[in-house]
Image 1 (tube, one colour):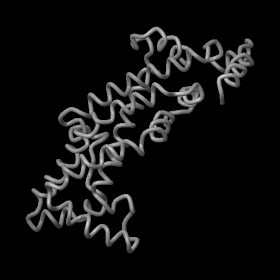
Image 2 (image 1 turned 60 degrees about the vertical axis):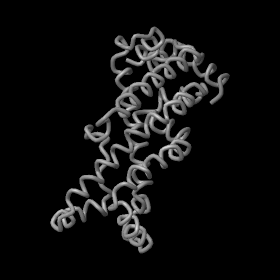
Image 3 (image 1 turned 45 degrees about the vertical axis):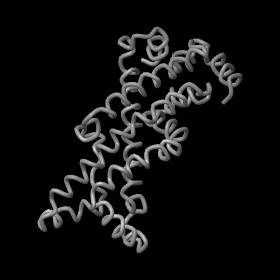
Length: 228
């Protein structure tokens, strides 16, 4: 939907009965776009600050990166054979890698927000609980993955168990025994880092929707207040 189409839609919705059905009928396209941009900008800032700090991933059950399923299943056996410390070391390394990587993506995430089109903003504003995640995944998952992967590789390389996992998991994936997404621990951690990042940004955006009076921004209060 381009700006003209969106404007026409809002004009049609401006009649009294439609306004009751669509609370955004009184909001101009530019205001709606500015509101969602402000919300996502704030969400990015908060998410990067939270997740990029010590224990941002490791200490947060919602985004903590667990062992891949294949290795998680084998972890009890590894602990019985005296390798429990190495398993724990790998889990810590995975999550520390995520905490180190996240701040590197801040500028790219903010750039995606800055370059949002009216259609993008409308889709996020009216697209449901996963709209924020879908927007950022579409705009940033590829380039952020490229940025994050070397950081993750460096962190996991310090744990010998990672190399052993990759050798075994690669063969298991080739036989169809595990998911391709779990065949390489560095790529697995990179994907989980992105999932956690998008999750927290979306949580921040939902919090602003739920309580626009506390947003500290006139445009946020106007746009998200209209949705209540």
